[in-house]
Image (cartoon, rainbow, N blue to C red; front, side, top):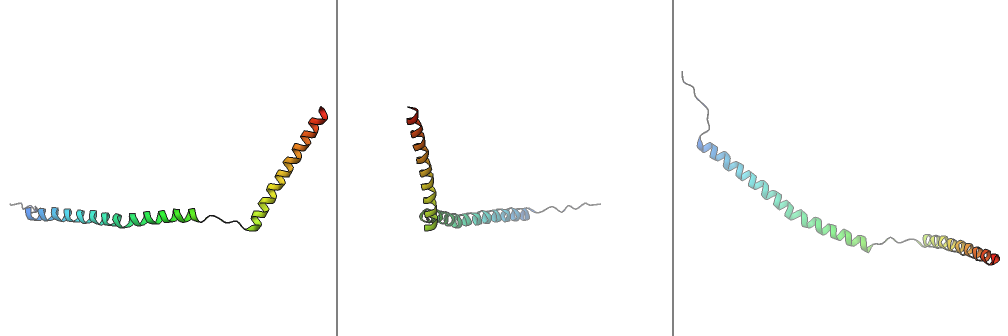
Length: 94
């Protein structure tokens, strides 16, 4: 009774190791090439976007500016009236 084992020969093992090394090298090369291509493009895009955002400032319409100015003036007038009242009360006490 003889038992035969199905072991891989040395040539087959060497071939598998070489294929594994080549596939790993190709994978690493592909990753590096993608990084080399896309990272500079992304950095350029990001810098241009930042520059564009700084250049474009929101412009308010004339109506909005007039409305904000009117609110500011009302607040100033109210504060001035309060100060006048306080001064007159202080003068009355003296």
